[in-house]
Length: 219
Ligand code: B1M
Image (cartoon, rainbow, N blue to C red; front, side):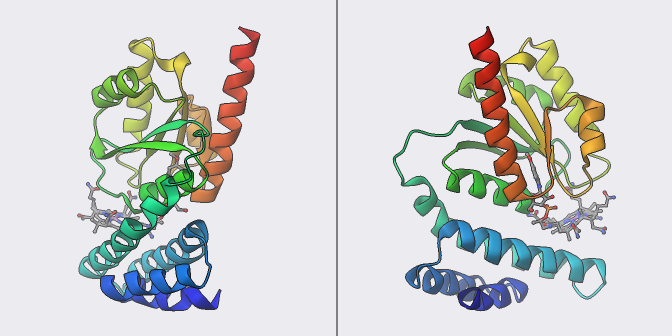
């Protein structure tokens, strides 16, 4: 999409004001907020990740690119939530304990909001007990866990165990995602689903809500 090439470039160079301007121009040209996320921000950040892996980018570049995406989210978020329609469901979303990566999680949250879900975003580095109290407070249908480090993936299992111990496991569907996470890992810890991408997470959330409604109707 031509209107998104300036946004792509601005995120790659970490220019937050150019990124905001490019997003504004794309919106004015009729590009939807969801397309700005899925066809603009998401591939740009995937490219930033690739450049880092190849040793072309270092941590400062990552951080300024992340800052540029946050500037764009600040513009898109109000547009994503202003539909006024009944939410498709409520999702409690966070990055697990020990893990500070939030770009992918934020993309997932924004895409869910764009698809009509209400998102309660707890942030990053969230310990299992905090998930338990937040489920009690917010009563979500879905809990979404993100992890980007192999060392923090076990915190997903710990969170599921804490929900179980608190008697809350059957009240929520749990979906997991993040670069090192796989369907196999999700199955091994007893999660209800694995989302490979932000748009995959939206499809999964819809399926989980449908399954939950079916289970509730069967009693
Ligand atoms: Co970090 N980091 N990092 N990092 N970082 C990785 C993950 C790493 C693979 C880089 C590398 O070394 N090759 C590596 C992990 C290695 C491993 O675990 N085996 C790593 C490391 C080691 C570290 C530190 C330990 C480095 C250090 O300090 N020595 C440190 C850890 C800090 C901590 O968390 N405690 C660290 C720090 C950082 C920064 C702060 C500099 C920065 C994060 C900034 C931020 O998030 N605000 C950062 C970044 C940016 C990366 C890379 C380059 C990019 C991650 C990213 O944002 N990708 C990453 C390398 C890479 O992935 N190529 C790397 C783009 C994003 C859109 O993709 O997050 O995968 P992703 O999300 C996708 C899907 O996975 C999915 O949807 C998203 C969109 O499609 N998804 C879900 C994500 N969550 C989901 C949840 C769902 C469903 C789908 O359901 C709930």
